[in-house]
Amino acid sequence: MPTENIERVSIKALAWDIAADIHYPPGFDPGHKYTTIITAHPTGSCKEQTSGEIYAPALAREGFVAVAFDASFQGDSGGEPRLIEDPAFRVQDFSWVIDYLVTQPWVDENRIGVLAICGSGGYAVSATMTERRIKALGTVTGANVGRRMREGFTEYDPLGALEAMATQRTAEARGAEGQVNDLLPPSPEAARQAGLTDVDLVEATEYYKTDRGRKPHGLTSFLFSRQATLVGWDAFDRAEVLLTQPLCIVVGDRPGAFGAYRDAYELYGRAASSDKELVVLEGVSHYELYDKPEPVRQALDHLVPFFKKHL
Image (cartoon, rainbow, N blue to C red; front, side, top):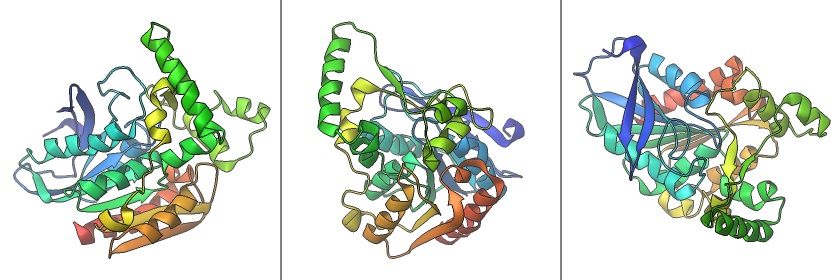
C-alpha cells in the first residue's frame, strides 16, 4: 500500500519521464478494478497546485483513483528546454499517462476519465477528440489557450509576436539566453501599482504569487521562443465532429480576461457529445474554482455524479 494513499511515479514519455502523483481511494485494493481520473494542471501551474492539491484528493475520497501529473517540460517532469508550452506535447501527455495506466492491474481501461482545469481544459478537449481511451471529460473553468495567444497574451498582435518569436529562437540557436516571460506581476501589490483591475489577472496574482497557491514549480511562465505553435492552435478545432464522449463543463459566471466563460459556451455549443452538461456557477470567478471550498464543492457536486454515471 502506498504511504498516505499517494504514490509518486515516473511515466515514460517520448524521450523523458512524466512525473505524476497517484491518489488512491481509502481502502485501496490493488486486486480490484478502479475508475481512474487523470487531473491536469492549468497553464503555468504544476501538479502540487489545484489539480493535485484540491481536485485529485477530492476524487480519491469519492472512490476514484486520481492521477495528477506535470506537463512535459514543466514541474518535475523531464524535457528540455524548460517551460515549453506547446500544444502538441501538452495533448500527447494524456496519451503517455494512459499508456502507463493501462498496464496497471487495478485500472479498468474502459473507465478512464479526465478532469482538466483552466488551460489544460483546452488541451484535454483536443486530446479527447482523438484519444478514444478517454471515456468522459470534465473541465473546470477550461480555457482555449490558443485563442488567448492570439488575443491578450500577444497584445492582439499575433503576427508581430510570431516575428519576435522567430527572431528570439534564432538568437537562442546561436547561443543567446532564453527569454522567459512571466504572465503575471510578481505580487498583488505590483498588480495594484500596475493598475490591473480585471478579475482574472488580479485573482491569478493573488493565487500564484502568495502563500495561498504558490509552489516552487508553479511558475506561470513561458519560454517565449517556443510559443509560436500555440499562436496557431485552437483547442476546439473539429469538436463538432470528433468530440463525442460525455462532457461536463463547469465555469463561474464572473468572466475575466482568460475567457473561460466565453469558451465554456462555445465548447458546449460545438461539441458533438450527445450527453453534455454546462454548469454555470452563480457569483463564482475563475480562480475561486481553483481552491475556494464552496465553489470547489459546487463544481464537484456536478462532476462526481457525472463521472460515476459515465464511468
